[in-house]
Length: 166
Image (cartoon, rainbow, N blue to C red; front, side):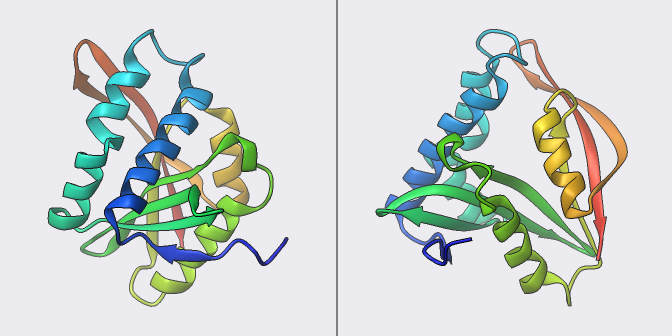
């Protein structure tokens, strides 16, 4: 893979805005055909908007790694340390840049940075998002549980919990 894709921590409001934009593009691509009408926009506003991301960084212990091209975020990974495990909140790659190893590069960065501190990494993924499930399995994650979460507005997140033992 080309070395032009470098990973860095998101630190500026502009970078956080770009994460939100990348999330919106990625979510619509991945979920418009999997979720009921309106749920994608609802979830983007609730979980991926600029203000939510900024608050998560400032107040909830989240860290975001980004990959940029031409000063635009094209891939990102959000994580949150939790006691004895690491929650990988998001690994998203703009659809135009998928299948270039960027998600793998982000996961490997997180693994290298946090492997000494956490032996268990986990994430949640929509049960119907077979492309993401396949990618996570290729990283070494296994499905260990499932969860249904009422997120309001008559919407539910129906996810697998996948874990990676470091």
